[in-house]
Image 1 (cartoon, rainbow, N blue to C red):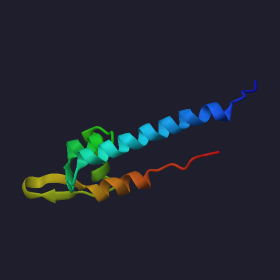
Image 2: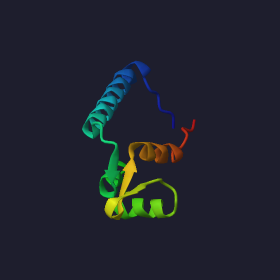
Image 3: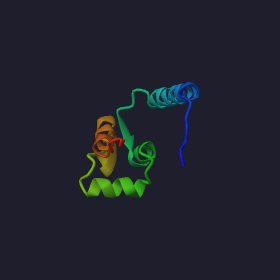
Length: 93
């Protein structure tokens, strides 16, 4: 089976998808504002994990976190970005 794709018809679809994705990224960044650190439930939501999954990753030493007064756990924005960067997969041809 052979599929023929007209690139001229595909280009607007790709452009619209990229534009929508970039708009979502900007909206997400704006929603975070200047917040420096996040609670475990909020950090888990940002990473699209369940809080217990994030806690397990922290306890296994796979993500850095800070313990503040009252033994509360906070994740720095940089910790979340680093965690995501370490778990990237490369695109395949």
